[in-house]
Length: 288
Image (tube, rainbow, N blue to C red):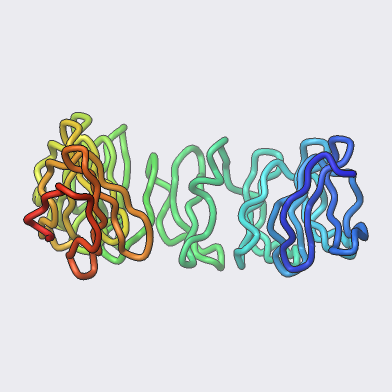
C-alpha cells in the first residue's frame, strides 16, 4: 500500500505513496493528504513542518495553515521562537505562526547550525557581521564579529580577522585573537585549537592543558583526549582518570564507558571510577 512507512507516534505515522508523503492514524485514516515532498517525522502539538515543491511551511492536522508553504528554511519546531528564512532573510515566529521578530537578518546555507534560539539568545547577521539578540529582538551583542559563540556565563568566544578570542559580557576583549577555533567554557576551562592541535585554557587565557592534542572531546561529563592514536580521559577539574595510552574509549550511556587496551575490553563506571566488567587479561591499575 505504501512505498515507505514510519513508526507511529502518539497514534500518528508518516507514510510515502507514489513518491509523495502524507500522514495516517492507526485505523489507516488519512490525516494529511499525500501531496508533500517531505513531512517532519515528529509531531509537535499537532502542528507539522512540511515541504512542498521545495518550500517549507507549517500546517495543523486540521489542514489549517499556520505558516504558508513559501519559506526556504524553518528551524526546530520545539522552540518558543522558531527560526524562519525567506528571500535570504531570517526572522522568528511563535508556534501559532505570529511574527515576533521580522524577516530582517542576513542568512547563509548553515543558518540552522547557528541561528536558532538557545537559552533565550540567538545569533544574527547584519552586513556580514554576527551579533546576538534576546527573545524580544533586543541586541545583546552588537553585530561586529566575524563569528561569535554563545555565552556560557564566563566569556563569549568571538572571531575577528580569521582568529578566535574571548570577550566578556560587556564585549570587552579578555583573551586576544590567537586561536584557529575556540569553544565556550565548560566549567573552568575552554577548548582551543592552535596550529591544528587542541588544548585547554582558563578564563585568564592561561594554558591549563598543553595545546598538543589531536582531539579533545567532551563526552559523558568528561574529556576524552586523543594523541598519536592513543586515548585518555580527564574530568572537567583536570583530574586524570585514564592516562593517554588506550586504544579506544567510547561513551555508551548513563556514565558508562567502553575502553580498549592491548586487544582487551572493559566497561568503566565513571561515577564510581571503577571497572565493573572486563575481559580476561584486561589490566587497568588506575580504575580497577
